[in-house]
Amino acid sequence: MITPNPGLQVLQNTLNLPKKELILEIELNGKMKFEHLMNAIYHQFGICHKVLSANVEYFNGMSFGTVQLYINVYQEDFEQLEYYLNKNKLLNTTVEYTCRKYL
Image (tube, rainbow, N blue to C red; front, side, top):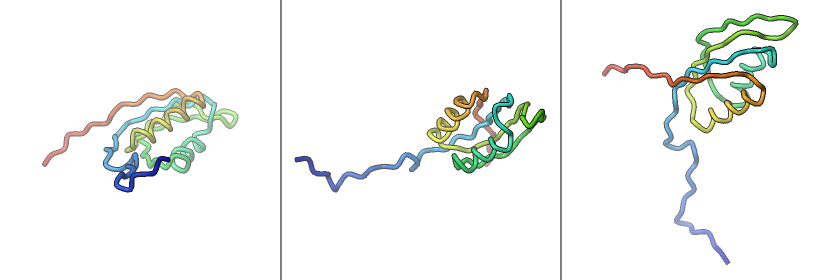
C-alpha cells in the first residue's frame, strides 16, 4: 500500500514562474469576429491585454485585418491561447517585448 508523504508539497505551476511580456499579432480572416476574439482572450483565458494597433474592417458581419496586442502572461497560459488561435485558423505571430529599464 502506498501512502502519501506529508512532507512533500505539490508546487503550483504559476508560483515563482516569470511572466513573459509579448506582442501578439493576429490576422483576422473572417473566421471569428474581432469582439468575440477580444472577449475570449480576456474571459476564457483570463489574459489582460492592451491593443497596440488594430486595422479591422467588417464585411457581411465578418472581421478582416490585423490586431497587435501587448500581453503579460505565463508560458502555459500563452500556449493555451496559441492552441485556441490555431484551432480557429487565425494566423498569429509573437515576439518577446523587451524594454530597457533604467535604474
